[in-house]
Image (tube, rainbow, N blue to C red):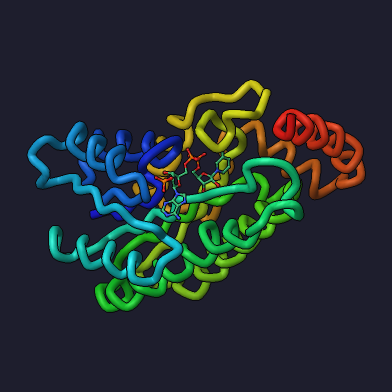
Length: 248
Ligand SMILES: NC(=O)c1ccc[n+]([C@@H]2O[C@H](COP(=O)([O-])OP(=O)(O)OC[C@H]3O[C@@H](n4cnc5c(N)ncnc54)[C@H](OP(=O)(O)O)[C@@H]3O)[C@@H](O)[C@H]2O)c1
């Protein structure tokens, strides 16, 4: 069975639909209890295959309670999907009162949840940890958010190597912009979150080092690696427009 964080909206919610449709049993986690419970009931009115566990992934007790609830209901955890994520919502990160919360949600929580589950997965010689990174973890554009996603990418790929041959897989899914609560202020053409949900469900069937979706973002990643100066010139006006809009 699958523990999915950040299931109350956006990519997590779309992933819950996709995984349920492919027959996975789910533990849905996020802070908004009402949304989460309604989603669990919608996906599984019986309450036997999908449960909601209101969770704040930044709290140690809350993380332990999540894994405890998964064990009580299903007896085991096979897959952890670290999807919960935040960014600095308004303005520049250095003006935010608590910018490090981005690191706590996007990086510390996945590491701590992984640490809680690894003994079980390693003992069983099977399991899968899927981290939701970002193209911002390849092409930096927002200091705090990119720091968290570069960190998560490094963690994922190192952990994958550390666990090679153990039967425990680690995959990283790195989305470009898609429609969600996180991107509601962005004025860009964006697909819906279902494209990411399908990529997540696919890596459960075939583990991958990293999948960048939508595919067009591979071009940007490649461009930033070979011609970072060109991206320097193109990106700052985009960022300034984006932040000017958000602050207005
Ligand atoms: N949308 C994009 O364009 C995009 C691009 C690249 C990467 N991503 C990544 O995709 C993931 C999902 O983001 P999204 O776009 O779907 O945004 P979203 O709609 O804002 O969803 C974020 C989810 O994270 C949960 N969350 C936030 N803080 C939490 C906490 N402390 N404890 C538990 N859950 C928490 C939220 O639930 P509650 O508020 O109910 O807690 C919500 O379910 C994130 O990791 C994000 O960085 C998104």
